Image (cartoon, rainbow, N blue to C red; front, side, top):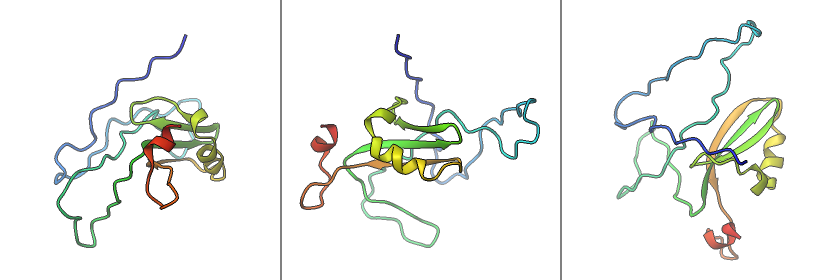
Length: 132
């Protein structure tokens, strides 16, 4: 029986002018008291595009263009790589190229949040090709 995907969590930041706050910190695993960092989360809320008239300006801002693709979180851990969709589905098997590239970062642990796209001959994102 297939595992039911988790219900997405609430967005990390409701008011985009408020400072970021961390969530609850889990207790360390008593079997690993020397672990230098807290365990990786099972899932992170992806950064989503926000429609604005023009990009923000100033040194404190960073932005990316809106691509027509799938928003993914690539979880790279010592025991493997997982590629999680915005809806919480594990699609590692659907992105073998991304999985292989992510494995080159191992054994470092990290979560990469980004957009998977396929470009056509003119260099424009083609969602139909990505779906195929």
